[in-house]
Image (cartoon, rainbow, N blue to C red; front, side, top):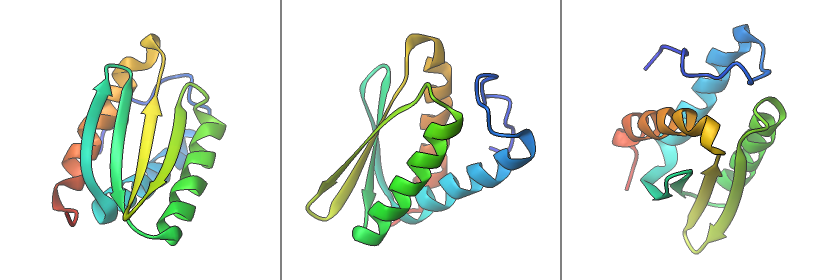
Length: 113
């Protein structure tokens, strides 16, 4: 998935920086994603493996993402041996969450379980 047409106009990240941000997400997902689930239509849950260094990486990425895409709500929960990242959006941005879920599933297929 290299096409960035799914990125909404409300994203304020400069266009030339978007591929770099996508690469950050792809790297995290490829290395750490254990499971993708959709507990609610407007909420995506990513189960990430890792330690406190992964938590710091996730929190930094979430902070950057919140700065340009304020329609996302991120919740990071550290659990024994796992890090859960819940991503929520409003109804208007449901297609963005759908695209992110598809990208996470595709990118995370080779991640360790």
